[in-house]
Every structure is written in C-alpha cells, then in structure tokens.
Length: 217
Image (cartoon, rainbow, N blue to C red; front, side, top):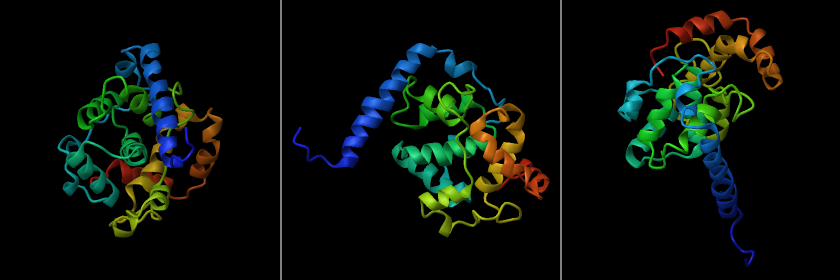
C-alpha cells in the first residue's frame, strides 16, 4: 500500500502465488484427478533414473544435475527454473514417463502436493497433455543453461558440443528429442524454427545414435 515493496517481492506474490498457483488450483479441479494418470501425448515410457529416487547428485556427472539433485535431497526444494529447465528438461528429452515423474516430484518436494504438481509436471514441463497447459514442449540445449547459470564452466560436458565424449547431454539430448517427437509436433507453428534447424544438422543421425545409448549424464 505504501508503494515501497521491492519489485521482486511483489512479482513473487502477484505472479507466482495469486497468479500461477491460483490458476493451477483451478486447473486441478477442471481437469480432474485422472489428468495426472492418463496423459502421455509424447509416448514417453522410460523410468525415472534411480539417482533421482535416491536424490543422489554425487553419482551423476553434469554439474547442473549434480547440484539440483543434491539440493533437492538436502532441502526438498529447487528454484522453478531448475525444476523446469534442468529436471523437467532432462526428463522430457529422455522420454521419462510423465506419471512416474509426477509421482517423483510429489514425493521429493516440500511443496509437492497432489494438486499443484500435475499441471506443472504433466502439462507445463512434459507436454504430456498435448498442449492444454503449454503451447509447446519446454526444452532447450545446454546453451540456455550456460546463459542462465554458472554450472557449465565447471562441468565435464561442453554445452557447445553435441557429439563425442564431452557432448552436453542437454545439447545433444535436445536434437535427439526433436527428432523423436517430430511427427507429433510438426504441425505446431511454435516449433517450426527448431525443427528447421534440426533438419539442417549434418550429424543428426550420429547424435541420435549417441543419445540412444548414453549412460553418462
């Protein structure tokens, strides 16, 4: 009322609590409980990695994933960008089953209530509802993580490289993911530019083969 509250604090209350959370609350009741258990538009069937269930950041190599998993294990919390663009991004690219992923988020986070996670995980993060919550799959390569954080400077993987031993699992995973889901999203005009870039890659098949057999991330 005095007009002297910091802008960041106001944004947090207005946008994240009064805005987003209220919208997600209404989505929960509108979409119904079956929303979390029936949607899998991109046909993702891989299990959540055991390191995630163990909240074991020490047994992964990528600096960003190591930090976020360890943080969730210690505090039950991660910033929403870390949830969306590291955890969610990885799960989306790797075809992790959205129902199991939702269960993991509910169990791992202190704010993991059954009403708040489905729209955020199944819809916003994994595009498993085919576009009810989000207009397009929320994914990026390592360049975005490098821009938004300082993780990449101390990581054994290079966000600029997509093929080879030090190829970033997010950068290579991004292109492999687009190739896999292209039949599902080719009609989405928001994805026209990324798909056009994918089609120009001369090493796309190498990237796909590499990511299909990747064991280190």
